[in-house]
Length: 511
Image (tube, rainbow, N blue to C red; front, side):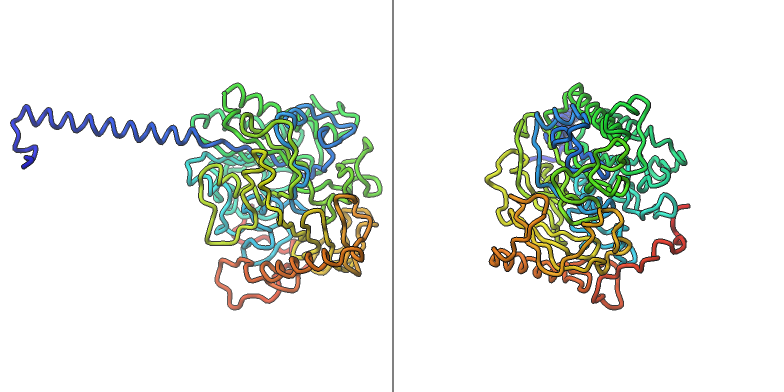
């Protein structure tokens, strides 16, 4: 019978205890070593989100006059996505990226479907998913999910309350000014906008250096090129495309700084970098609301795509996307499959070995095979639904896109019912179904519905299924989320009246 250590002679007890301690130390070392190896094996992620950059505003996507050598090289060393979708406007795009869901689906504070979502604290962000696997998480730039305002926003909905360890940036767009925050502290009012691109990048690089021994997630949503535009002295006046071109070329340079630092730290082969935009180009700052090409234009170009920001034509929602990951992402490749910002959360979660939330509907899907060039594994039935605020306006599957009938001043699209952001010819509605073959008609000029009734029927069925699941301007879908108790579930989406944004500041909002 094995004796208790207390029954051994003193010398034996000492050796027994020492042997036991040594065993514990060895086991702890093995466990910690295993944990460290597992942590080191998890890839790092960097998502760079430009604001209002058009589909053709990069050299590798066809820009004739904006020089982007670092992003072009990033595409040569990695992969271009040519059917990558965001949402038609800033806030909804950020909600989709953070949650993997259509903005229509996510819960918002006070249940109101804002034009720019006020993201409910019970929504699960990509940062919260990655933190379950030990990721350091940092956000650098424009947030826009705590109310679309530089003042009067909700402090308790800033990135630091939504899964990010560190925040350096601004609550929303730079329409008039930018107030700069570090975490939840206001550090600078009316910041010089010409400094922002470099400063966000400086902070992101410092974060990477600090956390290079553990997996990290860097979210870098730049303020630019959303108007008001500005660039630093080193770039202002350099581009033949005017100030807009200067801004893009400075973004390009600073993306290069990040890639260079990853290489210097020997992190490149364990890091995925995504570069994309939150929606199509802002056209209201261009002459005649046309595609930007003059030096004086302050908005971008969608190239062959029709229209721009705040539109469900392709130019409003199809955006450039570049993926870089040396040794993992096949160089010089192009992915033509339908993909979107909603796919980022499930994809990064899969790569990190984290659980995708199962207690709610997630609209995105893991496109990990596509990241690694296995294009034959793409979902052949992948469907994208085009919502403008709470209004379902079109649906795409494969080469086919069906615009649904809608009035010129669409119901529930306030404050964009007259849509001054896009050219007058793109503001007309559709009095009949409008089917486009995107493989032959990227400009969405020709209705081929009469020639393909079976395609129309299939896409209409998909649209009706989505209306049942998610909803439309006149119908709340069964899986639209409301986390707080309601006296009665609404029949129609509770969107605000046109003057909602002018209501007085909430009592618990930031001053």
